[in-house]
Length: 435
Image (cartoon, rainbow, N blue to C red; front, side, top):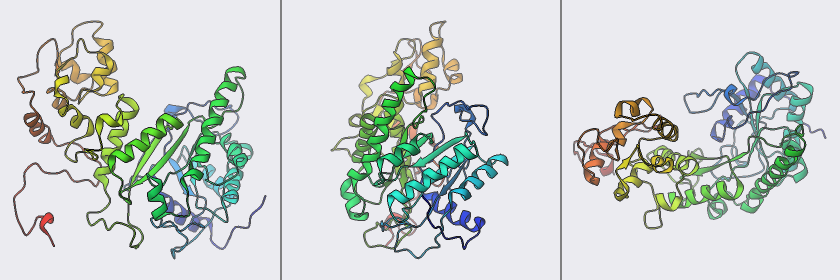
């Protein structure tokens, strides 16, 4: 099928518009797949071969990250590309995306492609154009590098399936954590329609895994799995609700990643929050930390939050906050504790826990060795003993530990200012008392 795409702009002008329009989609990941190439095409998709680098605003630039088009039939309140906005519009052709991808790859700028899109005409038209683009890349240009593409809710299942056999990862953005929030800010989008392609991808991936056990050379369907994204802070959901949604996506739909995007007010609308302090970056940071605990550390949402305590502590990372509320489980003896107990100690990550379990079979550990293994002792010393001894005398008391951890100056993401432990009281300078 051929669709007429406006060609009044040159390729450079389109690239400037559509690369900038893609920066608000944070679900850009290139990890999670180890797929050998045929040796006849260009590029590869080995897990160690996909490198990451980030621009000043946090975008991953190891992938060519673009929208196919920023034209859209929807009018979502929070989106810069909504139908009612007066912004420059542009659309690529499948050939132009291929030219850009191969050209940038040959210059060693990129290792793969992240291709999202607004909705042009209708979901079927848009999904068909994305399929045509991937088909040309894979068959005409023999590009065997990494490709992450969006599955468009509302598109025919047959088109999504065809596209999935050409992509490494697919994603469908949930947009907002709850159906109520979606009804308020994006009433044209419905949660059941968003979940349909997620269920489809999951079902075909399960079937494809069974086929590969019988036919080793069968084509692989979305081998890197699927991901999704939620905008945080545009609607009133608390952290407990958000993490329950994420946990549900991991358990029910076998999601590889859930991304959290701090809401940026790019439109003036009475239904959008004012955000005088800017995007909720610290909240986004805490959600990512908690998400890591769900995926790698064996935590459940109900252990970290509850309906009585629905939001994360802004002063502490979720793991430290949990440990301070469960001091009865500490101190942990590193020479005897099992792997999953070690994972719950602040300052011990899953890699350092693995190293501890392996190393203690060969001999006795001490605090110097623990530090070399990657244990963050400035946090862990309050919660562990090594050979029955503390590193130095510390109290297992909440106030004492909290005060010392807060003095440790936690590393926060770019753009997030640390909350000072002490500050000079001033009714004139303190923003909390400003009118």
